[in-house]
Amino acid sequence: QVRLVESGGGLVQAGGSLRLSCAASGGTFSAYTVGWFRQAPGKDREFLARILKSGQIAYLADSVKGRFTISRDNAKNTVYLQMNILKPEDTAVYYCAAKLVGVNKYEYWGQGTQVTVSS
Image 1 (cartoon, helix red, strand yellow):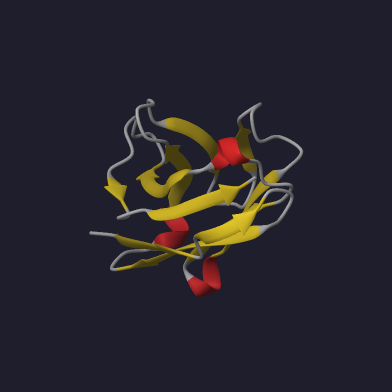
Image 2 (cartoon, rainbow, N blue to C red; image 1 turned 90 degrees about the vertical axis):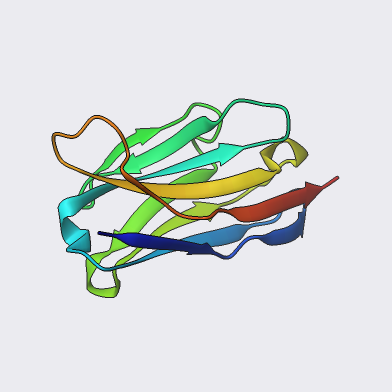
């Protein structure tokens, strides 16, 4: 079973950058597709990005395209979400999740990390 821990969240001014990390343990991390999601208060969870086990970026939401990017370092069992040109509307709890190829639902989730962007 894979355990995921997010880090790197915090308070940043609009226009700033943060890099979130999703560190995995307990499984063969390189076999998993990993996604980043976020949820703001009172809003539905939003799917932001997906990266395949090969490192290919399979999806970036329109709301973050051109500002965010996803990457992974399988040697470090870590996936990153680089967030640039942050906006107040990016304020949310950010989660990473993992699933094996061929599985529809993300099986493993982290506890989330808060990102707050001030105007």
